[in-house]
Image (cartoon, rainbow, N blue to C red; front, side, top):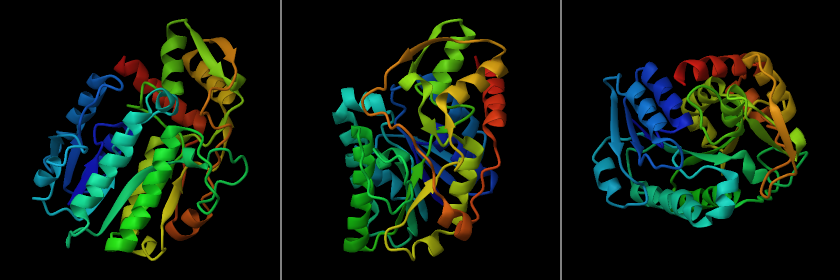
Length: 317
């Protein structure tokens, strides 16, 4: 039995669908908050409700009463994808990140720290934890977060280590790198750009489009997350396992926009702006261990991924 938190989220929905397609039983939890369009979140849940092995619980992980219901189930694995997303919003509203990312995570660990049936917790960290680094994005590199969002994700990694030492609670942290694709988050740049270009409106391009990212297509992200669950026992032999899920090939934001324009058959109106506070200049996923030991793969080139996203966007909107 798998418990997936944040199941109405972008990665949460896709990963739950992957696990259900593989024949697993899944309990999904989400509070359906209004950080972005709740209709999109509800539509994601409708996709999952078509599976007989799926059970949805609308609840908030900050509320300790939530866990009374969850612990009644024979949960073997927890995939914790719930949390407050968004780098820039974290600067304006840091309290939301402390509550949704740290407090909710501690509540989850407290609830299951003595479970005899639980084999492992896999939780979402972020590539944002690398912060100021422009060269080293291996899991052993000194972290230098530059946003509250990144700081809370780094805190989750440290907290998981504490629960391993105190209670032998096994967990694996996943640093996701700029995941994109169908049913994505409307607050992310690529989604906003697609909306605005189609409406002939101006797009704000920060750092003049020079940001570099390991753009990672959603199907590749969830397939590699699935490999982590399959190999959890092997991974847990590492003292404090944290893994990268990201396409090792980096592209600039300008490249992304150019490809998007080609697929939309429209030129964008750009407003080139300076870098925003909290924005990381570059992310580059180093996945040497992940490729060698877990057989990670990233089959979707950016051009192909954008085609799939645009096709979905046209049909959904």
